[in-house]
Image (cartoon, rainbow over the protein chains, first blue to last red):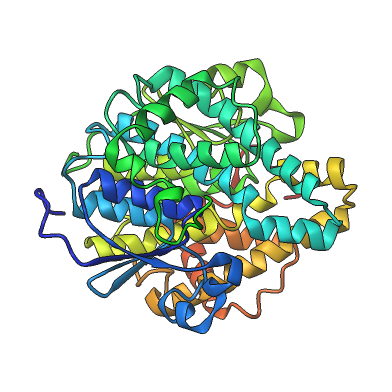
Length: 223
Length: 223
């Protein structure tokens, strides 16, 4: 792995303005000071399942990061690739123990919360269990609340202004979009004051603010 | 990060014989040639939610790896910690692009499949949507089949006897338990011949065979 950041590749981020996983990647690219081209994939129109996108990413999932021809899928893999390829400024702490703490926060969101409020899960709940919109929102809110309660304890232990200490890490790349999504699903965030504060502090950083869904070129004017 | 493996810490793995996430960690520890003490946490009795375990791991989730007092949660974080702390033999390839391919396979399981067939999800389906056992098995089988179809394409591109190339990687640590779970849920694996072959090849390695759920001290005699 390089010890200093190389000249940035031409980066093209295929994703959707409101996708939480695309949002994670935008935050990381921004915190690294990298420029990128946004390639919108309209999930509402099913563009991720279309032939053109599947040629790029056979799974038909966003985001995908193109870097000089290399195509990387899955936001956790993309984030680690960004960290390894552009190590400065670091988004992981220096010791393995601290890195494990940051990655545990990331996984608490990536594995325990986000997969359960994915649109494809809602579609399945509607199809197989006749779930109404209020049911799927309650389903999402349940998993978000349970997951955030666990995360609040991790930030209580490790946080210091941001999710881990006082410098941005991968934990913030996951936390900020998750809080955004929690608000979309009208989750009461008052039991998680540390998370709200950490997400607000991260969200105030210019690179993170610029990654906000409403600031993306494919966001509708009212977003 | 150390360039050579240090003297192994005293490792204690808190988990459950049949837990797919615990199984991942056992495989990685075994492939690294590390010894560890198994500390059973009986999920059927709810031990993971008990006070004793929550003092160790406040989220009440397995697995947790204790290493000389350090407690690491979340299997993706544990696996990366193992790789960083005991780099030999490597479970990630050497280039960032190849590492991203392995981590994308890992995330395809850790984020897109496994979270949806977790017992707590079944409990919620029963409680909120009156799901019968046949319904939760169909739910699990749906997500496993969809995820394995995507993974089959990744292994077609990158595999070579094992999931990525012909040496064990983190992808095998995720794949072997996922195939085990797919069999538990009676998923037809015939559409995924590459996955079945890769998992069988990995499972035949002595370190991986020793990590099998049925070989664990807390497995019931009939397992």
